[in-house]
Length: 425
Image (cartoon, rainbow, N blue to C red; front, side, top):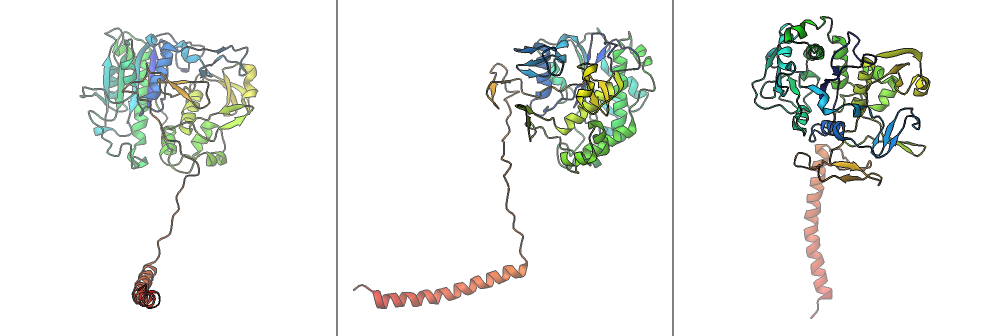
């Protein structure tokens, strides 16, 4: 899932991730994990945006990284606390656009703005009519499953225009959805590229905060389009071979390292517990993100960075002198505005016991029964035996029958012998 909440507050043009023109509305990209488990990723993020309380603040001066963070509960970055739910004006989610039903996309919308701002649907359909792919309002009366539902269910209710851009109308068109057959042959790179272009132009039009749909569309530069080769290569990495050169470049690692990280196969998108092995050192535990999470985060960090310096680097320490927001990426120090956020059930809170969580009964509900996953030992396995040839099976049967035939008279003789010599009068 990709979700793009747009904030009402003006963008900070000094660090704006969009270098075209200053925008009136700031755009935030979010890629939520574990949405299939009760929308865990989006609900945790929105809950903490609305009501996060830090019990142990660590100042930038006392932090080893030079950036303030929270030690309890552990949040290594607190940028999300600058956002308020009331700041959000638009939410657009994207779902299953790799297949376009009848060659077009659909928009499912819930408008709670009450005419205060421009609705999403007219802008999407107008931009789609001009290319690259047509869009029609969905005939479905209910919203499809997506993180948008998290924003719809938020209390107090948000005055937000929400939409889901999909490749289907009222029912999924992908008959292989969530199965092992939902592979590269079932997704069209050109359709994904067109959807990305349409989404980018729609976000730009909304961020202009124009007075009319026509003015918003007129302000969108025609040069704003997705890179088709980049989109195609990323799709190939995800659906064919995760050991691809594109992933290696995004992560800043060698091809040999990619071979150690993942098999030469489609990327696993399964959401599970923290990856192992844990990296332990100096009494610390480092929990590495999943490959797809790292790729998405690094790609966004590089694409949205407003300050890419000419300072060469090989590690984070080479960028420390530039400030806490700088990190080493692709051999250069850049200022990033992309962060990780725990996708953890809102009903779970951390505790002082290693590996244990406390259940917050006030947050537990039928919607979130607190999902669990069995933890299997690494030594679990199975013993396999090769199937013998048919001749071997026949020989075993013949030998068995022969032994049976011999055992019958042998038993009779043995009984006669015992009766003759050991019979009790």
